[in-house]
Length: 160
Image (tube, rainbow, N blue to C red; front, side):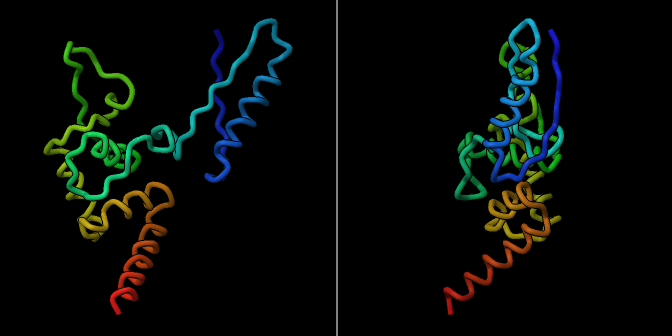
């Protein structure tokens, strides 16, 4: 069995089409082989990043206790390179998939500490956490601050 890894960078808005083109071209390029070829495409935002887009529901509030929404936060914090606690399976085995990266929906002291650290280092409020974190993961810190300022300006206009 041969395994090959190939990286391709495409604009975010063209990721689905880019994946289809890559898979098709790779399979066609291997059509001379005496065995069938397949190409699985995985989309991430960065090297060693989590599968994109995030499959967990975006929370409405920062202090959610919904495990699926906690996973949304954990997915984003993992993308920001925070180390999340990993727990063994009930049978004592190592977890696989997202739980192996700490994306498990469990609220721990470490999770709470990460939220406090993120809010403190970004100088944002808890109310700004969700949108800011999402923007920073997707577009970078500078755009996250610009979007935050735009949201704050829009709120000021509404209340005037």
